[in-house]
Length: 246
Image (tube, rainbow, N blue to C red; front, side):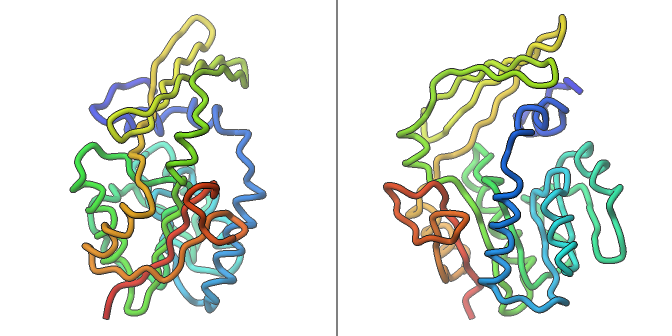
């Protein structure tokens, strides 16, 4: 549970503390977002969807409940072990590093809720985009849902504490060298652990360059889960809709 890995995400996402810390997330809002995206994309029921970096599969399960064939991929073995309990003929999960190409293509590839920008090496972030591109069928659509970094940086809370399920979390945040970092001190009974989240503060302009360099064409951009127009100074989210160039 507390095994150290060279990459922060390998340690943090594989612990139960990650899920305890974020148990208060508004999943109803997330489901509304997913419905809005599906309506916007106007998918057929038999269109297949890849949920890239799916976590414990909550959103894959919801997508599947709406009638779509869904594959969820995540690096965390613990998350995928949990998600596999929900597998069916139209819902599958697999441990997979999103930097590596996948064996199947889909009508839609989703990378949701800031599941991007984890890597120190810029080429690794490009590899994720290349995975999305190679996983798309002809005329397939990719969606990256990211934070709007300038707004996040401007509203960064330096320090706060949170308690849930008898576990105390002390959170410290900073922006440095192009990364937004959250240091997470966990106190569980007599035990203490340290984790972190470190995500590159990509801007809309950064994504424009990455998509173009990867042979992808930006179709649309939204700034909220209600699919409101993107505003770099005020929007909470950066939701990019794109497809491969002909």
